Amino acid sequence: MEHYYQPEIECASQEQIRAWQDERLVKQVKHVYDNVPYYRNLMEKRGVKPEDIRSVEDLHKLPFLTKDDLREAYPYGLLATPLKDCVRIQSTSGTTGRRVVAFYTQHDIDLWEECCARALVAAGGTKDDVVHVCYGYGLFTGGPGLNGGSHKLGSLTLPMSSGNTDRQIQFMCDLGSTILCCTPSYAAYLAECICERGLQDQIKLKAGIFGAEAWSEEMRQDIQQKLGIKAYDIYGLTEISGPGVAFECSAQTGMHINEDHFIAEIIDPETGEVLPEGEKGELVFTSITKEAFPLLRYRTKDICVLTREKCSCGRTHVKMSKPMGRSDDMLIVKGVNVFPSQIETVLLNKGYPANYQILVDRVNNSDTLDVEVEMTPEMFSDSVTAVSTREKELVDALKSMLGIYAKVKLVAPKTIARSEGKAVRIIDKRKLY
Image (cartoon, rainbow, N blue to C red; front, top):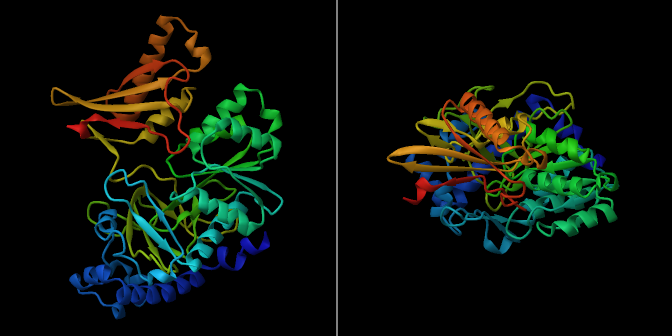
């Protein structure tokens, strides 16, 4: 455990952190310029040369990268090392075009797994724990990342992958899983199933590390209460490495970014201007230790806030808030920005389970917003009049939160399909026209 809680790194002074970043950034920019023609061309178009980058203060001079660049350069256009030096690829789902493929040297994998081991330690993990990983494996980074981090820590690792909920619960009970790693929506489903079967006393979970999708504070409290655990957030992107780019500590007030490996910026998503600490904007990452696929100033599209306020855990690395939505796929309904997390907050505050679906359509050239929400079994036994009253209460609460009208339909328990990976929360039929 001591090896992966590294106070000399995680509790370093701001001066030391900046010194590491300055040195590694300069080296990384030259590495990318010399080995990635695609990015070298972007730099030259801006009139930037490697010698222009002397410290983090010069980072703003570099051009941004976006997912469109990654798709355009697919598959090898952003590779910075010979292919023979790469030992693995990971990939995104590719639901909106070409897949994004990220390459890893063995050194890259070692650093990635170390970051995940840090996340496990921050959640209370030790070599005595049983780490139950039901993120997907294969091309998805969730399973391999936490699996490798657990191995680094020396914990007994259950590589369950996603699916087969009956087997998940059986192994959880029989093998005494103590740390659960999965998406928050699947954690909520597992909690629901465990409570329905009356197995709360048979599980030994103490913590959960949940990521890969947005989830609200209310959803966290619901999962913690049902499973009797402490639920920690984790953040990562396939393009940058995978989970472990940032992780929550015991304070649960944001995720510490591993600043010895990544430089974070917040920018205005419209202008690209770098914003000061504490301002809300789009998160941008620069990888300063990756060899095979080092992205400089990659726009994540995630909206959040960075803060260096002193943390009770003692770690000094900058913290990012939970993503508050995305600058690219947030819903714009009748000219209003709508984030699913806003809707989820209202539902959970009103006592509804975290099972809902948002449907957006366009009728007679006007946007419509419908929200289907599962009732609890107790609510389902209500009279028709009571259900109608509940729907009206939710309509009013959502209008207060969003500023626009949303039609609400309460549906029977188990009506909305459960997800063993990322939950499908939004169906936007406008995109089909």
